Image 1 (cartoon, rainbow, N blue to C red):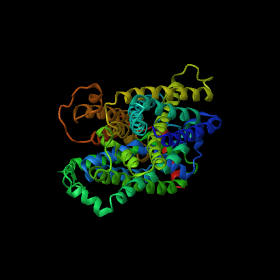
Image 2: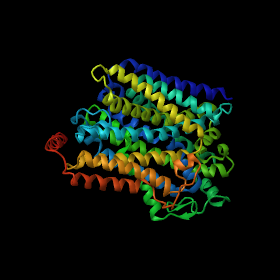
Image 3: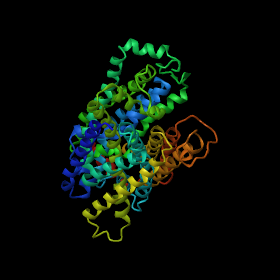
Image 4: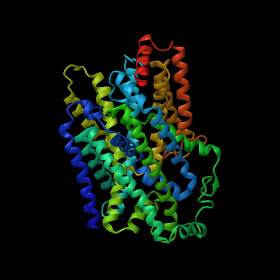
Length: 516
């Protein structure tokens, strides 16, 4: 065991737990715990949003895809960058203003209910269920990433204990500090992530003698796919238009990602979102470009004899490069960056999922609404954090799916169920609760059915160990699900008579505030 590496990681864990403890006595209401009282500054808003978005996918999933197939897999990163920019540009300010106008909505579920005056609460119920289902898979992907890090840096630490340790640390500081603790730790972790992902590929190129020698390894060594450096080839084969469309479609997910867009609603001044957008996009473009280079340069680094993948797992390329390129103390900081990527996403997802239970379900169905105080709701949220983490850890302990597949599944689920509703709620005056419910339900169901029966290696079939694929369409489930959700939302809203005069008046008030 390398005790230097262990010491650095322990110090890192101590820091994030200390942040959680600091905010423990600074969360006095449910709004403080799950939305920070709408007091974030633009820089914390930007980096916490992007750090919570990228997760271990950026440092492990994406480099692993590039490593095995080449730059053709970079289309996912391109789609994400485009989608993130559009989301910051057209959704952020509108959602910040409308969520406050619509009954000071604290969660995305509550916003849907208040925006469409869903007095029966069906939208909140369905959205809470969707959040629980897909966040369990998303959080599980983070635990898988953390386990791979631990298994490499501390060989004596087996996979099961690695999952349990990662879950415990994340739960502790999320349990204690709530939203502010999550955002400030994500801010610190975002800075650590971008530094690490930029330094590693640069160091690898230097170690191999420069860029010309690096590309020479890829051009001349056996086993590297043809056209490895081409955006139009993946695994040596030409990429079809359908595959490019599926990759670019990842950008649609940003419109419905609860743990990302909740940051828009938490900023103190909506006018500061322009600053947040610029900071977020600089961070994202730099980080994604560097992550792509990790996979591309990493292939040369491995085939030239610089390192071996951990257990043959391509998603460990960033880990093994750091271990081979740097002394223990520096490598440990890079490992901490990977853990930061895991934790910065899992903490946000746990918090959103717990708020969906406490604020959207328990508060609504409680028979004791009068005495259900903010203090009780905060403790309910904290208990739910623990329960969801346990379920996600149980899935991670199965070790049956890659990080990429788990993230892809959850990303499609949220993007299709919530994205169309968010866009139409902010830009279309004529929607109503029935249309929103129909669109949300269709998006949710389409993702599950398409991933299970119309693509190969679906997540649920993989976990269950069965083959359910009827026909492999090769199309990412987010595309048809997003389109169907919009169509159903519009058609049902029109067919059922549209919104009430009260909803239209509230929409006019929101537009007036937007133009001030």
